[in-house]
Structure formats: C-alpha cells, structure tokens
Length: 500
Image (cartoon, rainbow, N blue to C red):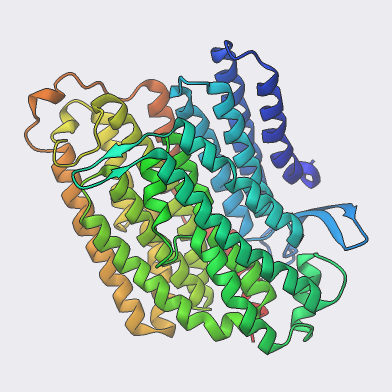
C-alpha cells in the first residue's frame, strides 16, 4: 500500500475534480461534502507518508519509489519517491489542503468549478513534491500554477486604496505572467541539463549521479544555475522579483491565499533544493553567496515593508516574503543545520501563513474591510479569531515554544557558521517582525472597540476546526521538534553530500 500511496495522493484530487464536474451545479452541499471528505483523505495519506518514512541509518534516501515507463524513447518515466526534504512538504500539503477545502465552503459563487480548480492545483503540488523525474517535476510544477489565474480573476476581490486600485484581474495576471516567465528560465535549465548530461533520461537520481561523476562541467553548472535559482526563486518570493506575491494575496479568495502562501511558495524553494543543489552542485557552490545576500534582503526588506502596510493581507503578504527569506538563507548556507532549518521553516511558514489568511479572511467576511486603521478591539467580539491570529503572530516573530523559533534558530546557527554579518542582518529582520506583529495585534484586536464592530460574530465551529488544525502543528513542532528533524536530516545529508 505504501508503494502506491504517493501516486494516489496525485490521483485522488484529480478523481475528485472529475467527480465534481459530473455533479450538478445546484448540488452545493454534496459538492462541499465530497471536497472536504477528499481533503480529509489527502490529510490522512500525507500523514501516513510522513510517519512511515524510515529515517534510520539503514533507510534509503528515496523511499516509496514507484516507476511507470511513459516515453522511453527520450527517457521519461512517471517516477515518484520521497526523501527527508519532501516528506514534511507532503505533510504540509495535506494539512493545508484539508483546511483550505474546509474554509472554501464559504464560497457561494459556482462552488463546483472553484473546487475543481482547487483540486487540480493540489494535485500539481503533490506531484511536484513527489516527482523523481525532471520532466514530470516541471509538468506538475506548471499544473499547480495555471489554476491560480482563474481562481483569483473569477473568485477574487478588487481593492480600492487611498492612492491606487488593485483589481483582481491585475493581481491574477501579474502573478501568472511573472511565474510563467520564470518557468521559461526553469524549462531552459531542465532541457540543458538533460542534453548536456547525455545519459538519455530525465531520472533525477541518475542525473544526480551523472553530475557527481563529471557529466555536467563546472562551467556549465555555473552558467545554468542562475536560471534555476531565479526561475524557482521567483515563486519563492525572491527579491526583487517578489511583488507579484503580495498583490496576488490581496486579490485572492481566502482558501487560495492559504494554498498560495502555504504550499505554492514552497515549490520554488523546493525546486532550488531538488534541481539546483542536487543536479548543479558546483553551480550552487559558486552562486550560494549571491542567494544568501538576496535571501537576507528578503528578510529585512519584507519585514520593513510589512511594517508600513495598513491592509491585513498586505501585511501578511510582505511577511511571507520576509519569512521565505529565511528559507533562502538556510539553503544558501550549504550547512547541514542551516538547510535543516530552511526545510523546517518551509513547513512552519506554510502552516503559519495558512492560519493567518484563514483568520484574515474570516475578519474580512464579517467586517468588509482589512484596514488596520479602522479595525480595533476585535478580541471582545471575535475571541477565537483573535486567539488564532495571536498564535500565528507569535510563531511568526519566533516565540520559543512555537515552530517559528526552532526553524529560525537553526537557520541563524547555519548563517553564523558561514556568513556572520548576513546572519546578524537576519536577526535584525526577526526583531523588526516582532515590532510589526505586536503592533498589529495591539491595534486590531485589543484596546477600545469602535461601536461599528459591536455586531461582529466570531468564527463558526467549522472555521474553528480548520484554524485549530493549523494551530496544532505550530505548537507541536515548537514543543517537540525531534520527529520532524529526524525525518529531515537524512535528506539534508544526502543533498549536501553531493556538493563539492
């Protein structure tokens, strides 16, 4: 069963999408029930993958491997497997998929089509994390991105600010155009790796071995790696190509924002690890300092930008840019502790931002505004929402006992081992994060409540269940990180073992 589990995590969302297409549009209750049930099955399967992963000394680097020949004339196989880096990402996808489908039950307009696109996106995310064939890695990577345009342009919302207007069509188009443009760079890199390796296969493991045996020269790797770094890095929010992300968040419906920040941005960082570090180790070694610097700029610039925002979604959007900077810093350390921290930060940030956006979406549905200059004293009317936002906020600023602290601590250790000055700037970014998060919590949730918010209602039981499912991992990883670190460590050691 475990040997087929990964493929079923891809098949199930596809089959769910097909089943929903067959349902009449009027069957809204059945549509939501089927979608949430599918999300629960995906969560159970994802947890099974994570728990079943053998991290013992005798465990294989890639496990649950399944291979189906597809186009043998050019060496393309449907090849799946997970290592210690992919296993937590599979679990993250399950958590966000379940909670996202629960929150999406709020969608009234053409819920069937909305869920169909959502499950296609989820299938693409699972496929990217599980693929061990470079062609299918890219195929699923693109599959996860394409539905975003319709999900935002059709079901999103436009926002009018004091000095400018951000329409949902603008946010959707900017997001997709920038990511597709970056994908062109990735596709050039993928084809170049396949051709120059000259071993007749897209098998990532075989390409890794060939690269380590000298099939890809140092000069080739140093030329191609920037394409991969920028191409994947853009989806991870890499500065200065990050502006699509906050604009996309502001326009997106709540569950799409949860998936966007929770898992889609992780695809970019994961791509740098899986393709850049694994297949182009000499290129990674040559460009790591550049990535380190850009990641540090992400941290500080994103934090300062978040502090200047007055829209809740823009605050969380720029906060995501800042926190993904820690992931990029950890990757660029080329250090076992730093890369372990980067992987754990991907998991922590994914859950944390999904919780942020779930609460922000609930506030917007009730108050019809996200303006932090208008919202005040909400804790007295929305106690559950306030509690969950505070948990996410404290995880964001790295409070000990929550997942953000452990992840950032490991990244900082790796950073100070390699580039102490950049590591110190990263700590400065964490301090700025504490300032804007605490100020935001004080302004929006505490203090004297304006009378216009007297009629606000708190989270529904369904929303409380979804937010609670996101809060538990933040607490669990913060209190007991060992199971996660045990799974991550073998994958990190294998990746770093191939570096020069």
